[in-house]
Amino acid sequence: MNNTKILLREEINLSNKKMLLSEQSLALIGDSQYVKHVLGIEMPLVEYYSFETRKKIIEEQIKMQDVLVNAARLSGIATFTVNIVNSIKNLKDIATLVKDLILSPDLMAQATEALGGVCRDLSKKVLGVVTWIKTNVKVAIDGFTGLFEPMLEHVSQTLLSLANKTGWLGFLSMLGFCVYVEYLYQAVFVKILQKGVDYISKGVDFLFSGTNEVLNMFKGFSEFIVNALDISKIIDFLGGILHSAIYKKAEYAFSVIGTVAVILAPVIKKLYWAKAIKK
Image (cartoon, rainbow, N blue to C red; front, side):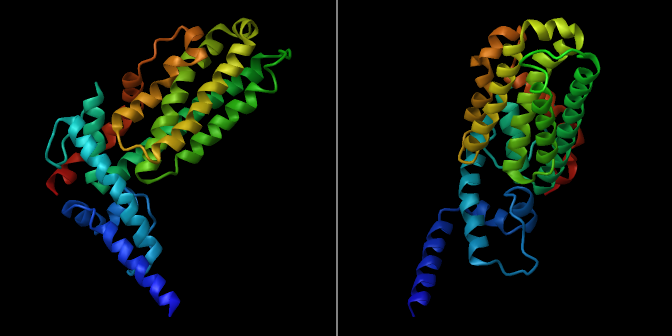
């Protein structure tokens, strides 16, 4: 009897939460492809969703509803329709793309797959730096050899792991880490490849601690995006690089929007807009 009351109370609470959803949100979560590719929730094989699954869907959609409203406001497009984004030039373009991906599970599936490819390509580039170090750093450099290689190998493996992520949070996680790694590659790793051992020898502490600092930003980013409902705040978080110790020494001009544009360029290129616009 007590169990029945508890279950009934939980169902009533869930029903009250569901009432917070707009008609559009209710329509969206009625699409199993949306639930899978946008919310990132794997659907059960049977048609009936368990209480826990239904609860997770509703709670995630309440967040997504706010993200969608925020993205629409930032994009300057009041209606919840899919618009074509050809390139990323500013925050408005990012917000428009985010809105489009949320509204179309087909686009989100394509975007996460394409961004996974970006992660794998970056992973290869990072491993290229490891190979260069193993080939060219013949003499142990105190504080560098034995520490930097494992760090880069970990970065490479993290990229490969993220490449399999799905849904909205998976997309943001891949985007965030790729932004950090792309910055490190252009600001630090390229200089290692170009200037060699002399560059390494003159900045061991800077290279190791600075790289580690930027990579640690991703841990904070991963925690932040779970509850971040504002696209502009997410982009601002990525801009934390501008306040890092390594940024002041790397002599590399970093633009958050510009780097996001580089990461998303192959993603946008692979999106098939026509089908999404017809819906």
